[in-house]
Amino acid sequence: MTEPARTSWPAVLLAVGAGVTAAFQIGKAPIALPFIRAEIHIGLSAASWILSIFALLGATAGASMGSVVTRLGARRMLPIGLLLLSAASLAGGLAPDLPWLLTSRAVEGVGYMLVVISAPALITLLTHPDDRQTAFGMWGSFMPFGVAVAMMAAPGLPLLGWRGLWLSMAVLLAGYALLIHRRMPHPVLPASISPGHLLHDIARTIKAPAPLLLAILFIPYSAGYAALTGFLPTLLIERMALSPGTAGMLAAAVAAANILGNLASGPLLRRGLPRWAAMAAASTVIALTSLGIFAPSMPAGMAYALCLIFSAVGGLLPGCILGGAAIFAPERRLVPVTLGLLMQGSNVGQLVGPVAVGAAVVAFGWEGARLVLVPASLSGIALALALRRMGKAS
Image (cartoon, rainbow, N blue to C red):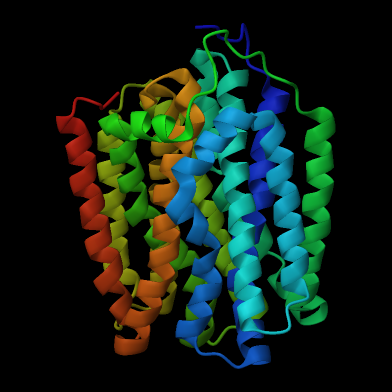
């Protein structure tokens, strides 16, 4: 199997930047939610779909999209994904009603999936094996970094408006697609890599137990992270009487804290920490902090501190999961399919997490969020232990 003689770090950073730009489309929704609700007069439960529907197609077709990327090439599909995101954001900024907005968000999700499968597939082809876990630790931070930066636009929303934010993102995405087209190097593919049949690729990947288990493990984590970051601005406004701008900035700090765990995953794994142990520990911390964040008696400042811990330690999970794609893929050709399967698990969590938490909050108040987040985290611990029993702890 041919491996690059050395890592192309500029290309890795360019690929991570594509992921960050795509993740802006996740972060823009939470800060815009109060403004959208005020304009189109919808409740919290209905508004939760603006957060969740983004993940709809990825939750149902992630592995299939990975196979498409395998057959058409990650270098070709990355700018296409960015352009699709751009067109959908433009359509959303012009949306006359909620159904139009939800449809545009679903299409954004398609473009997002193409980006987050193609970019790490390129990272795999452009990195030396000794550098790959470090590169994937950097890649794992694309979502929290992108979400955090997008949330920092909150103070400008009263002037810009949520529609202006959507249109600005469309321009940015188109510009980055052009940058990728011009600057991303073309990786040399090993001679052993040849196109396969879509269904065969998916079946081959799913039959390998480790990728499927990692994909399932992604579900509880992404459900909790998406719900926390998605509803945190609203929670801060209601519990701390903050302005939307201030709440958005504080929520951005929580999203950014997740970067710490992602970046730490590579050094910890290289020093011999088993992958399963890192994931079990992170899931335990998420369960404990979820109990405190939504406890009615918890002081607001302490609850916010627990949000930071939730996010920072929880960041170990995506770093460990995504870094396992190149290790556990049945063959190197199927790394994009494995990434698609992993991101399918992530998107299932992003789809069900905000909706489930939103329904629990409507029914029981903010403390009802614990009824969703704590059991989800406990399932994450059990899945990490299952990975250990499979002997896939490396």
